[in-house]
Length: 221
Image 1 (cartoon, helix red, strand yellow):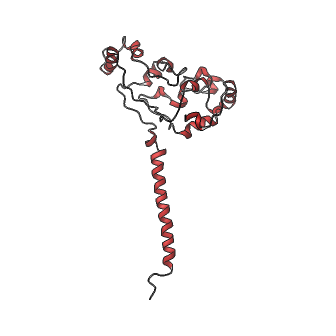
Image 2 (cartoon, rainbow, N blue to C red; image 1 turned 180 degrees about the vertical axis):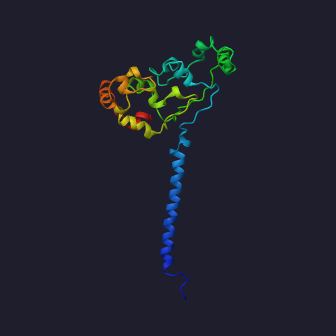
Image 3 (cartoon, one colour; image 1 turned 60 degrees about the vertical axis):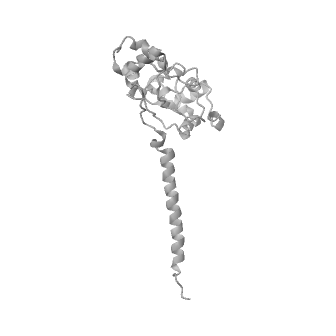
């Protein structure tokens, strides 16, 4: 019986299989990259729609309202706390009292029903995060949340992926600052603390007793 395929067909078949595996593997890798690591997946830089267009640029940047005035739990609680409507009304019972944009605030105050804000920095349920311990160890608000004083609408500055958290846990001396500058936007160690971060960081790590916690159970409890 005559030979149907040439001997070179074997090499062609093997090459085809290898190419198919590479193409499929590359495709799956691209899908994983899009699904897990892209800003589309993490929603990094994506401003959330809120019931009221609250502007941090106006309140923090222009008016100079400090973070802790609204986020009262950030120093002593796991959660930073969304301010109650009464906090808003401390000012808005006197200014912009007829603004239609602020009617949901007034209605919330009248009915004693909380405003349903959309959470921006929303960690998975399997991640444990405590605001107070980070603040006490010298992690500034803008380190995680970015320059909120420049955000007309709040968005997620960082990816919030584990690799991003681990960067600080492995080398806290690169990120920590003196506690008195925790809420300062645009903090510069050379200007504010009069030292470079290379000089200041190791000192604060020792002074604040900061440990390089990299075990799984630190965040996954």
